[in-house]
Length: 184
Ligand SMILES: [Zn+2]
Image (cartoon, rainbow, N blue to C red):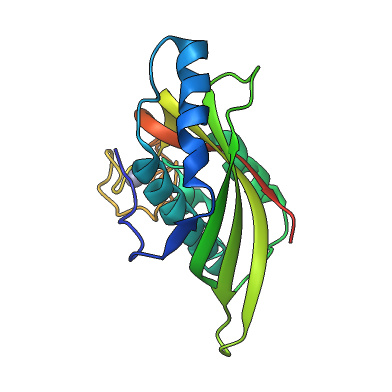
């Protein structure tokens, strides 16, 4: 499975950690088992995903998010104009909203307020909703080199640019971003 290296520890604070036991018990009542990961793991994953979203926009390459973001979220990002090119996420505050019902997966919904810094040193705040699915999730990933001709492949590429071999495969992951709404 190819997953990008973790972005170097962006500080991320949870505004309401006291609400996690209630959310976890809602998940347990619904599924019969406790959440597959604990809150600190979810928060670290979210912080990593936030940092990588900003990196992907800087690189103009949403496909580098494969593995951690669902195919659907990446597809949407590919069709949107770039939102905050050139900004780097430096810190985030996260509010735990709950575990919405009626979705395909067990999901933790959060709202993140992300502080970002531009190349000129300016700062800005971006508000986003993130749905994190947990469980046995499948995702499409590319390869790091072409299995046919051996050419190195850019992160997230699903086909070889030289011999056009389809390099995609399916990976199983325990956590995934299944929805992302950017408010500002
Ligand atoms: Zn090739």
